[in-house]
Amino acid sequence: MKRTLILASSSPRRAELLQQVNIPFTARKQDVDEGLIQSPDPEEKAEQIAMLKARSTVISKQDEVILAADTVVALMGNIYGKPKDKEEAYAMLANLSGAVHEVYTGVTILSEQQEASFVEKTLVEFWPLTHQEIEAYLATNDSFDKAGAYGIQSFGATLVKKIIGDYYNVVGLPISRVVRELGKFQIYPIIDNRTS
Ligand SMILES: Cc1cn([C@H]2C[C@H](O)[C@@H](COP(=O)(O)OP(=O)(O)OP(=O)(O)O)O2)c(=O)[nH]c1=O
Image (cartoon, rainbow, N blue to C red):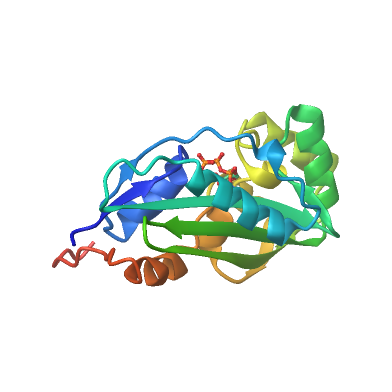
């Protein structure tokens, strides 16, 4: 059966990563109340929210395969989602300064017949940040739609000293593992002869 991938996400980054590896999809925005998931464990929370996002998305045709993800940042057991305001963003960055934190992205793939979930972890080390550096970063307005109040793919790259693990996991979708899992649902990249 021909399969159709539905990306249950409004994140432009997740869409771009699927485009980068040439997997066709349709975006179908889901609206879930992430507050329903209260797990204090960051890994479990990322996986449970990803499952909630996937299961809240309507499968409107039999051939559809739903993909959903959720990214959280964790430092010493504390979970950092998207900051509510500038004060919270400042506090997150000040805590991440000079430390190694974890980024977890939970991924759920489901069809009418199958469901698979996993969590990918990446370690990220921040340089020690001065008050001025944090203020300058906040002034770019890059923080507010991102877990942990930074974007590694934009000016937030200047905050990062080192990462261990999949870079794309930090951006919001561990694309190489996702491609492997999608293969189990008969969804594959389109291979053509493009060179760029
Ligand atoms: C740490 C980090 C997070 N992020 C983003 C990835 C996620 O989009 C976001 C965390 O929020 P999520 O709730 O995972 O996702 P979302 O609300 O953006 O999208 P949707 O639920 O519709 O799929 O933080 C970056 O873009 N760069 C980073 O370096």
